[in-house]
Picture 1 (cartoon, rainbow, N blue to C red):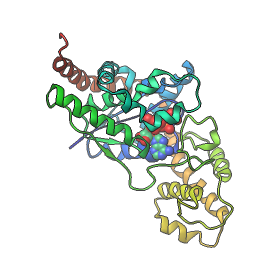
Picture 2: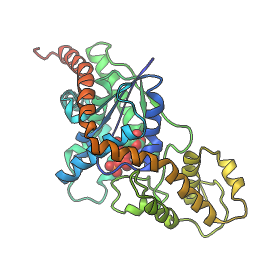
Picture 3: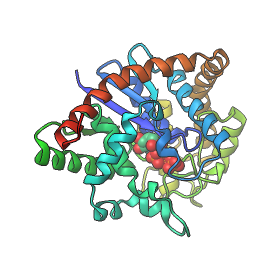
Length: 326
Ligand code: AQP
């Protein structure tokens, strides 16, 4: 049995990109490994957040973990800010990180592009992410394709620490779904689908009403052709929709292409919306029950206690090795 650690930022409401790229795998992994799943609210504030919105988004993300099938008796579900060792090891990892390494991060480049003022936290974010992972000496990290570079840095930092202070950290490995690890925006297939995109038409939120899902899919950008064909190079928008379809209908790309041969985009999009609704509606129903009952707060408290037990022990060992007075 391996140890798995992963988390999502509460920087918006979770999208189907987060679901396919991460959450769905969490649900599978809990049956195979020892799992720690957090909502990384300290990462969310690397870009400005309204306090009320942050609170709602954080509670919503945690409740969606449970509504999607994570069992709090199998996996520890918690908020990053509830386990103080994250912030502390985050600082220690920042001191081991080189400026050049952070400057190379494409996510920083993307998120800071065109902005007059960029918070230092956005720049040092990967050092905190390294701490998140290393605190648990995690073996497997379920991430979408976009987070691979951050995970590489985590491995570099683990190496650096081990070389300077003696072998201690495990080398974490990425765990990625084979197809569709990267779901793209519905309005621009050159950008990944993101929960913080200011245009809600660019994503399907897991909590979007069925009528909203149908509208968003019908308006999703496609090329001017008619052929439902997976060809990311020449038909990136349709290929993205096929990829989403494949995940939600549990059908192969070839099966989908065959089903819509000669039919144009209309019937394909209509069915895609129904597959999304069929998967998301029961999750939304369960979500409403969880929010109404208030049970999420007990789940998060228990999860934070379990996580802190492991995280505090790691932090203590790291501080001893680095020469802090304990
Ligand atoms: N479009 C995507 N396709 C596949 N996987 C995705 N993930 C995110 N977007 C996609 C995966 O979801 C997990 C949570 O990511 P995060 O919340 O920590 O940050 P992110 O990758 O920056 O996600 P967003 O939705 O794009 O958030 P914002 O808008 O705040 O930047 C990760 O495992 C990620 O790979």
